[in-house]
Length: 93
Image (cartoon, rainbow, N blue to C red):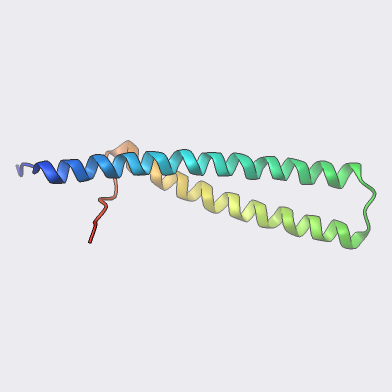
């Protein structure tokens, strides 16, 4: 079995902290975008809008849904690597 060097272990610890920080940031961004979705839905139902304005809101809502899905995929990947204890090793040049 190969023994890890001190610098390799340190790099893994730094990578794990970085990925944990990224996961927290992604969760906050996703929560914010979900709040924006709720705001759009409320605006659409409470306000008398033209068909053009409804179309703009619907397009914005769809864009948010696609963005949230992409961020959730990234969050899932990051959390999976954290759970496996296999963080990306950060290489500094």
